Length: 66
Image 1 (tube, rainbow, N blue to C red):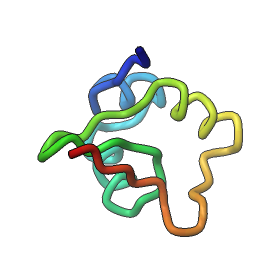
Image 2: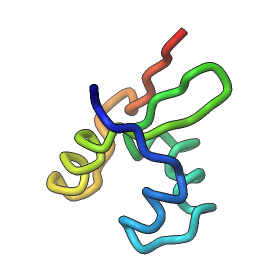
Image 3: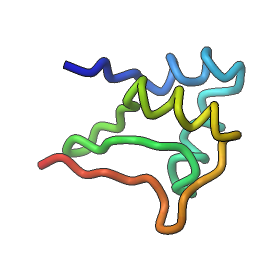
Image 4: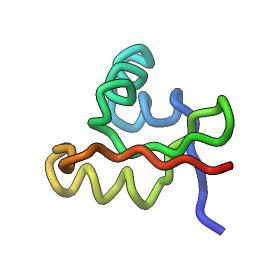
């Protein structure tokens, strides 16, 4: 099972403010998973995003789990 990170974990990893993490999420720049109302971050996808220079793909990154 993949490890899902909290926004605070991602903020610490990227050395940015947690508000910046949520802004990147709203703008579909950072890869994230929505589980109901919760927002989580797949650690593997975050690592890949960092390796690719932090650029969003066309259509964004959003994934919804119902």
